[in-house]
Length: 132
Image 1: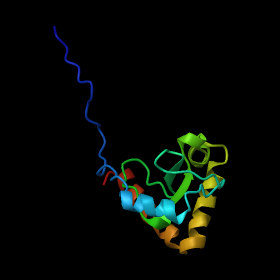
Image 2: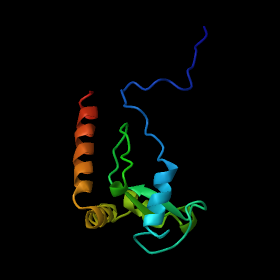
Image 3: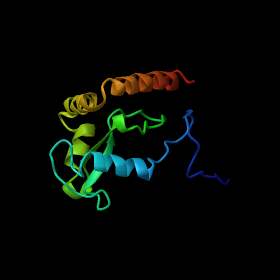
């Protein structure tokens, strides 16, 4: 008896389209806007050498598109600097506090647009959770 094994089975759940890559023009614009500087700790670097990374302030969650808008993007420390600031916003002890700091940073620059993005993303995540 022969058993066939599928090394990459299809997922049993529905997902929306995969996230699109951030346009390089937008990435460069965010880096320039932020002066090639981590907005949390002030370290300076170049994106090309991975000293800095572009962070989505409002993360859409699994299966949802990322919102590539300047109001939702911030420059943070990348791998060359130990990825400290970027990593901490996702999984550090103070990640919720740092996430609120990033949202506040965006509000100071762009008003309530970050709140609209957050609200839009929450609606989308509820639809995914409902199987829509």
